[in-house]
Length: 248
Image 1 (cartoon, rainbow, N blue to C red):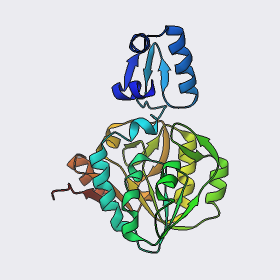
Image 2 (cartoon, helix red, strand yellow):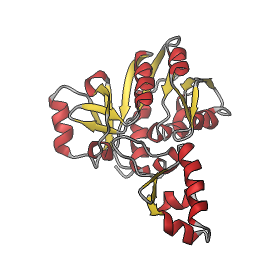
Image 3 (cartoon, rainbow, N blue to C red):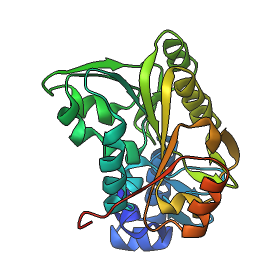
Image 4 (cartoon, one colour):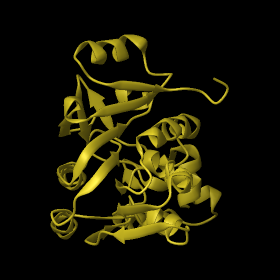
């Protein structure tokens, strides 16, 4: 059922019942459980994984969005990763695209709250893994909250790579306050701060303020981001890198 909703982005509950040849009551019960686990949402007769200004979509859905641009951004981000350094990676699907490239800079120490990152790097040669604990959240497959923040207060890393849901007027926002609190602690734990944001982030809206773009040493985006937006940020003194396409 999750795969069916992810494939369409949103789907009427009646259509799900017909597709799976089951009763509306059964579909509603299953959707309630999936919603409780943070995998999707049910609202006014529709099941959806689409983000809103108040709710982020699950990582299972986000991982398939703008994959080409995220990979381009990751290749540029690799330039900010130094061999032998300690690197903090958040739970975003954009930062996840950096993981397959990590061994090019090995040896490294990777610190993360993301289960996806932990699983991907645990068997990599010359990669030391430090996992941040805390309360587990299904919708992002990561540990968040006070316990995670407490652990972050006891580490110091060379570089942090984070992404975010929305960029509005030179400020980064996210739908979840607990994500904001955790990511802010990540910034405090790092000497160098790199924000990865594909073009869609400049078209989204989210409720909770995360950080000013000026708090970052660099913003890396893709070539689909409007030139006027990039030039405006640079005019404000921000370092903005535009990731090149594979053929360039």
